[in-house]
Length: 449
Image 1 (cartoon, rainbow, N blue to C red):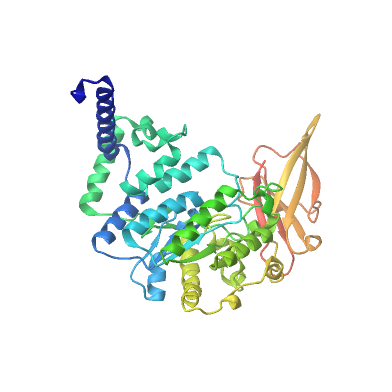
Image 2 (image 1 turned 135 degrees about the horizontal axis):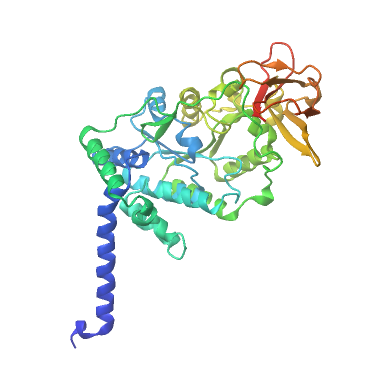
């Protein structure tokens, strides 16, 4: 019997041919459809290190708080190490970290893995688009073998087409876009990467993204008020399953694992209900696995050097702050590797930290109009401070686009008031400030009305 006479064999052969054709088309068109970016740089660096036979002393993994928070070059300098990499990616979740770890391990075999965790990182709060972004940003950093291992998780998912560059970039399937991408890629291949240091964020090297954005001191707003909360009952078992897989993988391959929470704004810790419960959860989890957990939000001297103006937003560090955090954290990592105690560097809990915070950490105003009276605006102010009763509120108005401010003395000091808009005009702005008096810099926000 001749095997190719069977309809089944012909069908299988046809399917294989189609798959092969699609694979070639995917590979060729990807060259023209995708622009050169951080994923390209990171993958090419990995290939180079693998070709040189290098092994990584430290590998960082985690979300954008990691890839904008820890500078590999600083750790190399401070610890005298040969190769440190930052494998963080946007919205990276435990499952993405796990597969990315396995893929990078095949290439540079890290000796130490430092995994970024956050208070809500083990909750199922992500939207479908965020989950897809997490999967794709990690996928884009993987080698071909890593992708083959990662993809089966999505074979039965309606999200599978997103892993095709052709599908993902279908809106850019235009000659002008493809030509621009091609020219940029050829320039990159010929001249190498040239960092645009004036950009808001730029690829610094070895996985780290440097942010040139800084908040002004005191203007980090209260975010997601009344929505953010943590309790052990809300922890997602699937997230813990992949944390366990990471711990198990590191244990089996004799990799030292450290969990780290990178610094966020003081506002974020104050307003999240159950923040300390999240810290306690990670402490217990780390103890059960016999690994370290460092909460850099509890660094004892952070109020002296990590002000709001060192943040790029309420959860990310500026590039300058990342440099300083990396320098300080490198010394803690060094003590871990030497088996020394590091408790002297940290506050025991949130209450101990708050005791040394002598300022209003954030303020927010909310506005509402009365039914039937559009000219009267009701203003409510909320401030985060150790003693809310001691907060002094100041309200200023601007009628010229914010060039000059006039203090509204009749409502200053009030947490709640009505504002008559009858003669306000269209360019009215309010500046709401909240402080404790004396020499402290108040928290403030500006609102266009």
